Length: 301
Image (cartoon, rainbow, N blue to C red; front, side):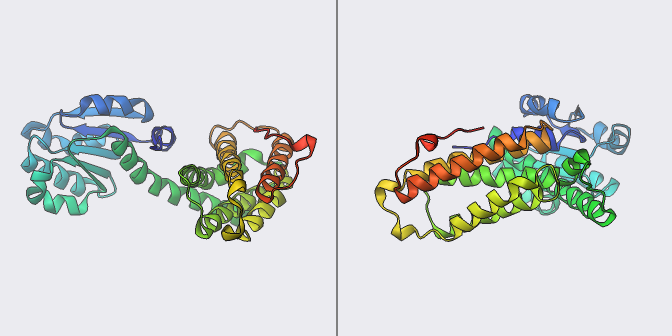
């Protein structure tokens, strides 16, 4: 099962202008054009090489994909000119493994490399990786400024969303990975400790606003519960409960994205009630207790 990174790229890339140099992967580049502010494409030749500084300046380019398959010599020269113009421009190099030696110096300096044949999901993953780093830095900066200036007030829900948007995105991404591991059958103390850590992170975020603080103890209590689970003491017939834990974490991930990324402010108290009941249900299944009538099934939000 592969994670769909395109869902994150469209959020991370919205303020970037991307330039593609080459022709072999135009169709793939066209697929991501809607995610970026603008997309520009140029062919790899001497004429465009001589104009590259002007192109970067006029189009305000901050991401460049260099497709080296047709000419590694020109690819090296394009990268050198781009790096000289602005070393902060994000560069991704596409090339055939047979070209490695001739591209070795460029490979060392670019932000990401992808070997031929170019796999679409791997390309998305690399884009996510290179774009998420500067976003995380900016997000941390916004959060630190907000905290120092004490701008996350009780009635400032928009500033609350802005301050923790980046953190929530990455927590949701981590939870998605954890759900995949649970669904694949992984059960370990280490995994439960990681889940608990993420739940504590969520609790910390929700504790920063009066409109969401009521849900904080639920996350903290579940985190504590998972840290204290003894895998070896769980009976095989009760392992089904971890399927419910997977659904709970998936629900939390979706809720974070809805609230902080898409800005769909769902009723916290409805989600709180649903989450609390689902946790009780999961625990009853895990501990082999008889279910109350009101907790006989999950009620995902």
